[in-house]
Amino acid sequence: MKSVERRNFLSLFGDFTFFGAGSSFASQATVLPTFIATLTSSAPVIGLSSTVASGVWLLPQLFAANAIAGAPRRKPAVLWPAAFGRLVSLAIGPFVLALAGRPVAALWVFFILYGLFWLLDGVASIAWLDLLGKVLTHRSRARLIGLSQAAQGLAGIGAGALVGIILSSSALPGPKGYALLLFLCGVCYTLSYICFFFLREEPDAQVGRPLPWPAYFRSLRQIVRSDAAFRRALGVCLLFTITGCATPFYIIHGLENLHFPEVSVGIFTGAQVIGGIVSALVMGRMGETRGTRSVMRLWGAVCVCTPVVAWVLPNLGGPLGSAGLLYAYGLVFVLVGAQGNSVMAGFINYVIELAPSSRRTVYIGCANTLASLSVFAPLLGGWMLSAGASWPALFAVAAAGPLVGLAFSLRIVEPRHRALGALAAQ
Image (cartoon, rainbow, N blue to C red; front, side, top):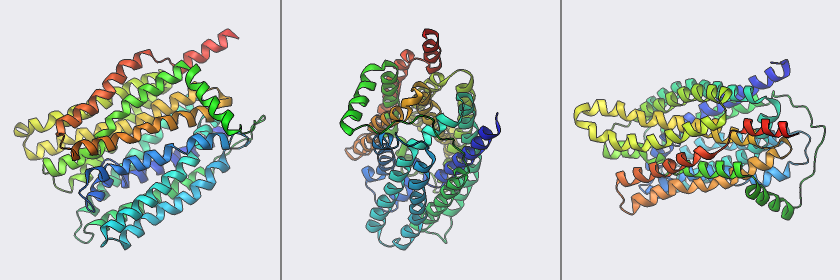
């Protein structure tokens, strides 16, 4: 590995690792649902945290892809929006603390600031993902994703232990403990920004110009219509993400229906991190040696297994005992952690490899924006529960979508095979 590539690898490694560690303090599967549940009992609102994060992160990328098309460097397009986003992330915890006695106001302020952070991060991410394809080879990129997700998982184990300590402390009742966790999340996000600052990027020798918006949207339609491999991968991704209808509610199910103690939030956060570490190492190696198509299929298998395990385990409560059931239920969050890493190691890296380098930002923006349809999955889960659906019904829907996607994944192509075919045809 050349010295510049090694420098960039380490810069992105630090950025990736600290960002993931921060996300452990504000986990969308454990911490945020239980935090929102201290302010409201509405299931749709509890599921809204995942929807807000995914929706506002994905939607602006379609426009950012065209806006940066004429820039010879991508780094400034990351630094500026990310700088404002980090300031917002540092403000969320103090605002929640200040409004701890006013639940409705705390909810509004949380969702506004939380949404603003992810909006700014979404604007920055399209250039960040393009840099990932620009400054690293496909093997280095797969290695980076695997190692950094494993490293952020190791950091997240400590974060999970701290989550349990803070939430079980009598000195930080109700929203106050969550306010501290949200502030620690902002601190880690800021450290990730500092690491990225050291990345070195050479300017592109040839740069295009942003297309007029009508022509740009026509080009997006043309990509979807003409590139069958891209279209199939996108469809498979959307089917896999239907499993998200249950993700914010696994922890609620455990606390309210299985009567786990609140300290279990920390245990399950740690389990989620362990799942992330193991899957990162497996998927990183798989992506490096076998390609991103294999990672996509493994992602689908994990998406099917997660709700099935959550469905089956409570029926084993008698033989396991209450303590045994609690730790066995941690397997659900091990699988949730594996899912979180699969999106980056599988779908996003798949699109980066599949896209022609000259149109990579357009492909990424198009993929992420169309994938934003997945934000409705948690709302679907919240609506089902509020309408009286049973937990088994919710888990059945969460398993059915990715099961269909897994069948369709048998038809997606490996990007490296398509690249080799294109070279042979020249």
